[in-house]
Image 1 (cartoon, protein in one colour):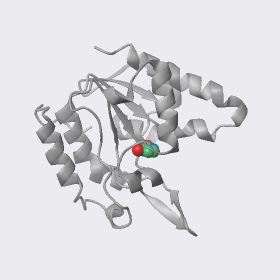
Image 2 (cartoon, protein in one colour; image 1 turned 90 degrees about the vertical axis):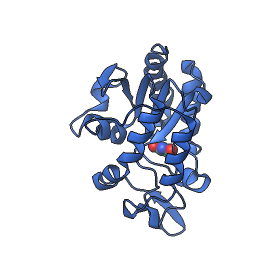
Image 3 (cartoon, rainbow, N blue to C red; image 1 turned 30 degrees about the horizontal axis):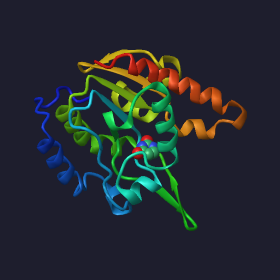
Image 4 (cartoon, protein in one colour; image 1 turned 90 degrees about the horizontal axis):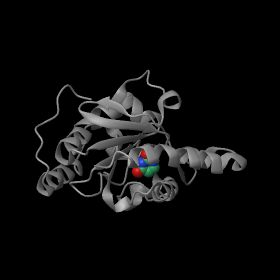
Length: 204
Ligand code: URA
């Protein structure tokens, strides 16, 4: 992350001010095509922050993180790991949807490093305001954004790392469960639940 976090403040007003400022963000070109900024959501005093990649099609339309197909997988995995969605602050490293139009469809495209860098002040602001006890990154893009480009999620998923004063557990992106062959889907979901179980055990 950036060398140092802004001082901890942790009041809802700080988060609301950040949210309002982010709604007008033009730090990169993604705001031009996206419907809106999808800022993080959850209690300002959450013990856990989950960090995903970027909003998808559904999130872009609704303005909320993880409300589409990946969100449904995440909800199921959280429930099985004994974590309530309502206790979690959910956000993304990039807060505008990046996509390509193919006919009438909007196909997800990975954010570029420049998009991740441009969006970083919002994530740093969320971290400073919420100060969660535990962070979990969902997928390679989020993990590399925080832990560096050589970080390998497959090698270190489900382990407790120290990062910028937080305990951080990397795991896979919930959408990866939807991409594996149907016969291995239960196993892939169980592995995500196991990683989230490691997270749950860190609850203060
Ligand atoms: N994928 C993400 O990484 N974040 C969302 O909010 C939705 C899908």
